[in-house]
Length: 248
Image (cartoon, rainbow, N blue to C red):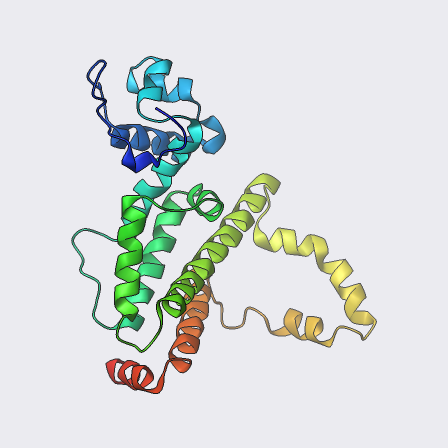
């Protein structure tokens, strides 16, 4: 086995040697359980082998490194973006919205997923199925493949960035042991000193008006996603834009 071959092109059952005692899917699921409970830093080949009841070196019959374990984890989690019992709607706006919300739910279930997926190519079977589904939603709108790839990428970049900020804020509050109101109160005097200079009118307005609509994390996510999809629809070729308007 060499590290230069695509992970999914290598046979899971080697032509020679002992019969595998588990599968790559079981390895991925074991790694996900550890990461969900304890974070990525808790994953090691020794830990996974112990959880699977196998010898550490036996794992190298399935993967060449821990990095390939991460590839398996990402591709396994991406499967959750596309529930098996739901067919994506024909309306591309609703379809991309569904994918975005399902991706957010998945990333909240697996807090390690967003930062891990952002830094590596996603070329596994579930990632390919996701891309096939997303591009299929945009097919027929008069866009080139490059344009469709850019738009799909923009939607998932929004989801990924929003989730990473959301999780980072929650983790910062957890580490501080403070509520959001308590943490804001810590900075109140400094903010008031800035406002007193008269050079920060928008900051002053923010302190007076922000929060009146009580937008929670879900509402902020929905608002930003809808504006993004509105922008995509506005930039479509006329025929595609008219079709989108009718579908709404």
